[in-house]
Amino acid sequence: MKLFKNKLFIKGLAYDLAGMATVAIPLVGPFLDILWAPYAAKKMTEMYPGRKGKLASVLVFLEEILPGTDIIPTFTLMYLYTYVWKKEPLRAQVIEVESY
Image (cartoon, rainbow, N blue to C red; front, side):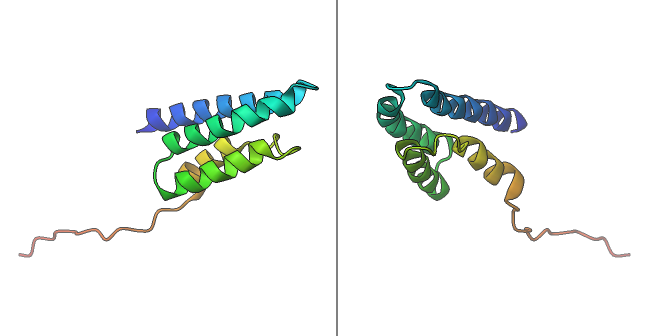
């Protein structure tokens, strides 16, 4: 499971860098964002299935399509939210005790 998480982290960094790279291209960059936004949203849904993946895909779409917001590392933030910051609720554990 740890390898899977690390792959997601590396993949997310790559997608964030690709999204930020459009800022470096003066005239063509904003038009590339129009193509990149739906692709990034699709990748976000594939990487994080379920309800939180759908919400994150909407956020990454808006972040990529709006001008000046390309510097937000949405994929990396989603990884951190999912695997670092979010605390899992404690599960009830059954402890068997032998009596004498």
